[in-house]
Amino acid sequence: MTLRPLRAVAADPDGVFPLASTYKQAVLWAVLRELDAGRLQAKERFSVTRQNQSLGSFPFDHSDVRTLSERMIRNSDNTATDILHRRAGLQTVQGLADHLGLCHTRLILPTKAWWAAQAGLSPAFNAASAWPEARGPEQARLAGQIDADAQQTRPDYLQRQLDTYFEQRHRLAEDLRVYNLSTPYEFGTLVAQEFLRPDLSEGARRWQRDVMALGFGRSALTITHQGRVRYVGAKGGNGWQLLTYSGYVETTDGRHLVYVFMQHGAEQTYTMPNTRRAFLWINAALKVILDGPPIRSAVSWP
Image 1 (cartoon, one colour):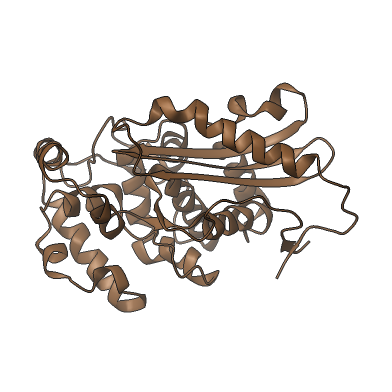
Image 2: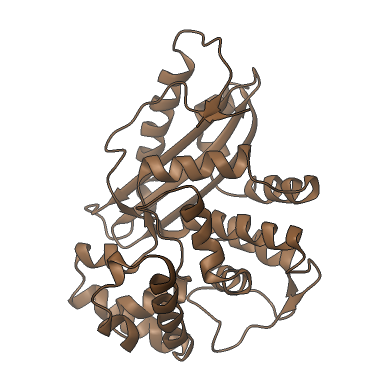
């Protein structure tokens, strides 16, 4: 099976948006590829330290890879994400987008690193005027320095400085400099690839599907309540004036659907209440796709 989209509905498909926690599914994909390659062991356990603890809740010490992966997707746990992201390798996660030629997609920074940069706590970021355009080895070098700065910052201090930043000097344009980001088209490409051609072993693919099924999305889809869904793997993210949702859907009649919703610059600072309206858009788009004329060719992508 190739992966060329046969029907699409889009608004601003090439606009660049912060990904927020939606990017965490790329960390899962990279981790599973590292497991398949033998560079990471499923039973490996990790401790939470001042250096690797990010914002929000965090896992118990000595959690294994499966536990962290589930917390990353189900709970959107930032510390679990950062532990796995660093263990897989910053460039390994970014490499998923680079391999697909997604030139507007940045996946390289752990959560604590982008918040430290946003709060002005990373000297490396402050000095790196070329960061937004950096690619390849230069991007990897700068990302490593920004992340090293972040790990020197206590999470409680980071939270206080970040609160001050948002209350006093937040600018939307700065979000695009610090966050991981993508376009709806590019991220839809990544989601389709990670589910339909992930280059994973059978066991790793089951792990991926089981964990991604824990993410938010299935219950918000109209077609779920119509009994038309066989599987949904999904992830969402939110932040100051931004909201993102993406998902992969298999229908009971064998169709493969991908949706991506990205909002940046919302009127609300806390955007989770916008979830219902986001899924009104998503459900309307999926209805257009599913109610279109029959397509007789196979799903394909170049």
